[in-house]
Length: 267
Image (cartoon, rainbow, N blue to C red; front, side, top):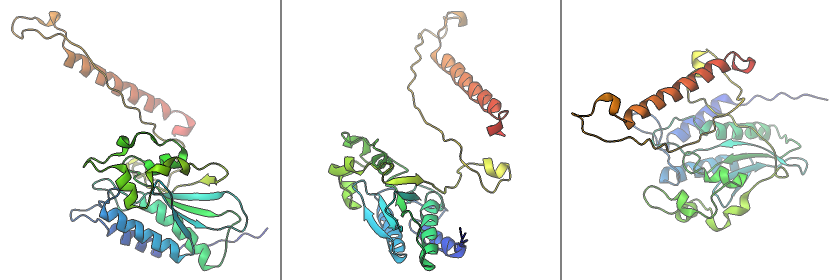
């Protein structure tokens, strides 16, 4: 077996990151490319052009996901990577964009030396990952197919209109689920949006788990009464009870975190 080591072009990757960051760049720092906005559309066209430069076949599925495919030598499920290029109202230049452009850089490196893997490589740009996550949800079969209002924009724009802007198709959203027959593996390069690695002076980290968010609405019922004639032992103050609950949850989370650091995978 012959092992071939290829070196990506770091300067080219950085230049492409800088070029993409110029789309929606804010005067005070950061980048704003909210999904379906003119800036998002401009960035999408820029990424598609870069994909086509390195012989990738580009398609856009019903969810608006951009899929750049670099064919392999055999008919096998794809090795996929990617991320998103939309941002929060004031996002960073590397969040999402790094995962997309780094994937393209890998393909560019192979293309320059005329090599292909056995598996096809797909670089995926997921639609609205900072909002409704319709792109990744459609691909995993978890989208709200019968609830268009779930994806309606804050300004009232319908998801049907939004998807049409980026060549998507709400009516065919359910057809875009991918399976193991389509994708053999998915790997994403992503920046950490926190201070853990920096605080530990680590240059890189391997993700072993992700946060699963759950939201609850808790109602605490008290009893209103006259402030001047009701002593403390006769009060049922909902705000006081809520404050105790907040402290208890905080202490529980802190305790679990400290205990996790005593385990092998927490060190």
